[in-house]
Length: 331
Image 1: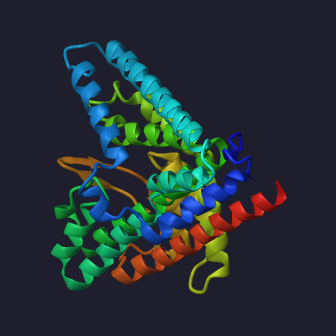
Image 2: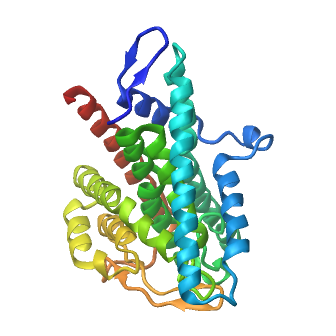
């Protein structure tokens, strides 16, 4: 925890208190749609900036080597700029008596607990109405073509999104915020957004986005494993879920996943619920052959399983908050 919150009145606030308040604000409020109908979300603005450099520098006539180095340069520059922006915001807020509250409000914008919960729950609610409604809801949280998914495929996709994004959208931003303050949080969200936009394994982005994808793997490595352990612990003390099976699935299957970080989350969630997750998936006209996480588990997932996954998600998030509180007491 490098950044403490100093106020103009000489009061020092523990940085983890700011992080916990930011987390609580997101749990309660999320991203109010009425706000972001009037002003653009900061991540959307950053995405527009990435899109600009993508159009200018990622041209198919350039060699693979040229595209790789241009992508690496864009990634380094944008992540550095994001971290400096975070430092500038921190410095300004730290001049005010209650600036730490502003820091918590800004930090909450980059934590996605409530938004992810609502989106995944919408898939369960949609499936309870019809397959078409479930497909429409899941299209907002996954990149694969929902028209090729049956009811079980829609449910598995929603559960996989809840598992993977527990790390990317909750655990990782909270942990980087706790460790490096707003500079760390801003830098992490920059890396994560770069990966989501250009870190694809296809002809357009294989080289231009490779550096961003590998950097995203690196900054998520520890948070993903902490998040996976929280799922294991939560499953161990919850009724109807199996922590031992979650751990065994992670040890056996996680490294078989195309993304070893996502593998940890999907394997632990699948093992906890007794479901087989991941496996072959279709994106547009491309079928991705991936290993099953918790191979041998049940593939016939339903909306009830989505609610079971959300219960684990809530409890694991509470475990993350408890971990922060414990560290705050001890440090």
